[in-house]
Length: 229
Image (cartoon, rainbow, N blue to C red; front, side):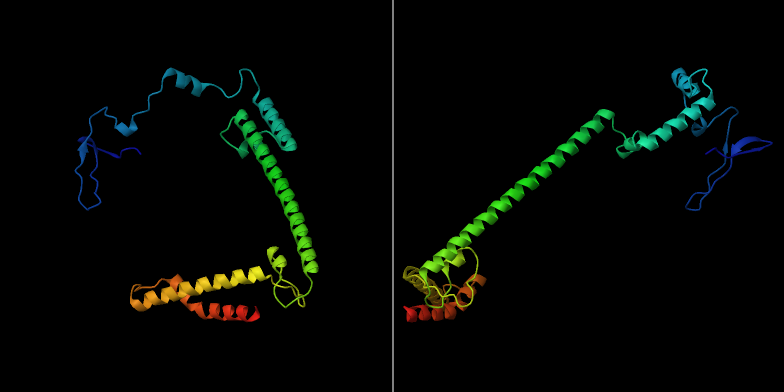
């Protein structure tokens, strides 16, 4: 922005200006030939001046021919879908960098395809294993025959609940193991209750309170198992 000068019979000077706070700056005299810093032209060496004065077209080339050639090139680019449009997708990259980027994208796509195929093979293998385990469990249920109306351990191992009407005997060893486990849990509940009554545990945790709350259910399950045995 050029400095506003005021000229009168006394000479040239910069007029008084008002500050943001409302006060005024005094006018300043300007000597003859003085050029403010913001108006001093930027220094340019001879090489900069040469490149600025260099024509855009080669010497002797007709501007009309250059415009026609440029138009033909743009039409060819638009027809093939390459050139400037592809370069604009990743501006600022060289041709080698763009080729490397395309190779990385291709390798990434191949890796994703291989992973999908591998996951599909694993899924087929796991489904076949599940079918085999189910067949083995069904055969085991058929061999054991019908018994009391309890859950089938073989079907529980493969995560399938027995259908209505299926009756399988619960092995005595599993029942004894379950009774032993229930008695152990009840002993732990009794010990925890004694510690609470004696004041050894003042602030029971959430897990301890849940364990105390399951005492009645554990006792009923134990009585039912002992009644059946």
